[in-house]
Amino acid sequence: MTVKITLPNNSYDINIDKLKDITLDTKVVIVTNPTISALHLEYLTSKIKAKELSVVTVPDGEEYKTMDTIEMILEHCFIHKLNRSSVLIAFGGGVIGDMTGFAASIYQRGINFIQIPTTLLSQVDASVGGKTGVNNKFGKNLIGAFHQPIEVNIDPYFLTTLPQREFSAGVAEIIKMAVCFNTDFFNWLEDNNLDNEKNIKIAIQKSVETKAWVVSQDEKEKGLRAALNYGHTFGHVVENETKYSKYLHGEAVGIGIVMANRLSVKLGLMDETQENRIKSLLNKYNIPTTYDIKDVEDFYEHFFLDKKSLDDKIKFILAVGIGDCKITDEVTKDEVCDVLKGFQI
Image (tube, rainbow, N blue to C red; front, side, top):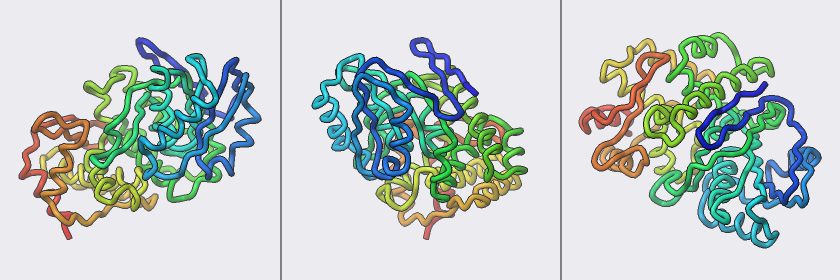
């Protein structure tokens, strides 16, 4: 099936099915990592016809989502004399997609790229919407650009080789979509297991449709799109504190969802029954829901490095029951710290 994302300057298709043949009358560079290259690169290259095709393989892992790796990608592009009609293909998970998109956005002031996501997290979320970037010592994705792909090709086949832990990390983003925007979808997730091809395709489709609808209304995250960061405000601090090495992104988002829900309960936006239903669904897929905060004050200060914060105010995305959410910067420090103390060692 195909989901269309409609934007003022760049509308494109998100194809959810077996990978189609890709014909491009230009130079093409595939950006991938050693893990995906070993498993699936031969399959991908058999699907591509291009004037010239080359591959740049970058280190695998969130800790390599840096400007040094971007330099590696750009150097490959310069050596192979790519021009403004050339195309990059992101072939991997969210890290590969974010870095490839960012490299494409700055190479000769911007060239096209295609997303071929291979993890569940990137298929349901990261590959759609044009957010690109890298991390630095101050936080996650603080260097980047909005740069939309020209198409996204989601082939569930790639999930057959995905480790269970990474599959579960992707489920966290699916749960995020349902909690914020779709009560019926959340109920369906409670009643169905995502351990078969039919159900996972349904979950991918519903998640992509939700993401496409949100991005179509708010491409540059001026309002509604910020709601997709539910769980991320807390989760990004968890990732930063653990130096992006202990938790997968989706796992940190799961922890962040639990923290955000605790705040929602405190503020009367959600009842404990709803909170427990969400936590139970996370637990069903072994997504972490606990975290030991060593220093509440230090954890709180990390919020101000988040892109969603403005001046001295922190923007929180909070679930309102199940199926709705709100974006607010009116939560007091005392209210937040009271919640954080509940996670303190």
